[in-house]
Image (cartoon, rainbow, N blue to C red; front, side):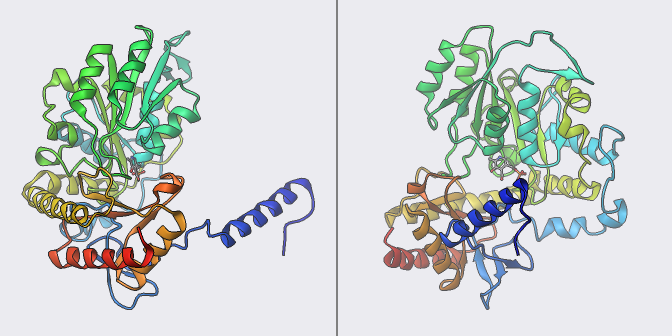
Length: 422
Ligand SMILES: Cc1ncc(COP(=O)(O)O)c(C=O)c1O
C-alpha cells in the first residue's frame, strides 16, 4: 500500500523508500524497550529475562523511584492531571512557588529572577530568544533598531542552544571545544557595543567534562560579555546543596554571578520534566507577553511541578548530600579503573563516562552485546550527537549503583572489548 499519485503523495512515497533504505542500512538504531520503571539502578528490558544494570538513566541521585515517589503520591488527586491553559492566560500558585524556591536555590536574587519552562530544551531555546536583543511586548519591539548581538558558542554546546542560535539566524562565532584562547581571540575582535554572549554547557553530556567557569568569568569581565550556562547535567549534582557548577567552582559572589545566566532542566537530577532559566526579572516578565513558546503552549501539569519542587527540597537537603557523596566517590573510582584498563574515557571528570568505540556499527553491536549477553543497558551514542569516528558507549552513573554493579560493568566491558576490539 502506497500513498496516491499527485506531487505531494509522490514526495511521501519517496520518503517511505528513503526510510526503508535507512532501515536496511542500519541507520535506525533498534532501541532497547524498557518495560516497567525506567529509572533506578536496575530495569527490565524486553528480550532480557532478568533485570539489567541501568547505565542509561540521568536520574543521577537516584531519586526517581524512592523518596520523591513516596512524597509525591496523591498529587494528581490534589491538582488533577493537567493545567489546561497557557500561563499567559492564568497562573497557578505552584508555578509561582516553584520559581521563588528555584530562584533562592540558584542564588538568582533581584534583579535576577526565575522562569519555569515546559522542558530544559525550551528553557535553553527561549532564553536565547529573549536575550538576543530583540525584546518585544505584545508585538511592540522595545528597540526600533535592535542592538547587534553575537553568540560565542562552544562547538559542543547542547542542541537546544545551537537550534535557537542557528535556527533563528543569530550572529554566532563557534569556538572549538573548551578552547579559551580561541574564545578570547574571537571576543577581542567584536565591536565594543555588540551584545556578547558566551554559550557553554556546564557539564558536557557526551564527554563528561566541565567548563572552567572562572576562566569564563575572567573573559566575560574583560570583554563585557554574559555567559549563558546550561547546567542540565550538573545542577543538583555539584556544589553545596547541589546548587550547580558555579558554586562547585567557587563562584558565589553576586558581583560575579551577575555575569551568568544559568539554565537547567528538571529531567535529570530532578527526575521529572520541565526546565528553568535564571533570567533578569525584566526578561522573565517579558516572556509572558513576548515569547511565543510561553504564550502559545499549555503549561506543565501542576502535580508535575510540585513533584519537581519536592525533589528539589530533597536535593538541597541531607539525602541530597549523602547521594552526591556516594556518586562522586564511586564514579571517581570507576573512571580510574577504566583508565587503568586503557579504555578511552575521553576527558570525563564526572558521572558521565564515555567509552569510545570509534565506529557507529561496532558501537551498536557492542551495546547489544552488553545488553543481551551481559545484562547491562548503556546508550550507544552515534551521529549526530558525536562524529562517526567517535561513536561511544555512554555510561550515565547514579547514586543507586552499588559496588557489585560496578564490578559487573568492568568485567563486561573487558569481554566486549575482546570481542569488538575497541
Ligand atoms: C545539556 C542539555 N541541555 C538541555 C537538555 C534538554 O533538557 P530536557 O530533556 O529537559 O528537554 C539536555 C537533555 O537532554 C541536555 O543534555
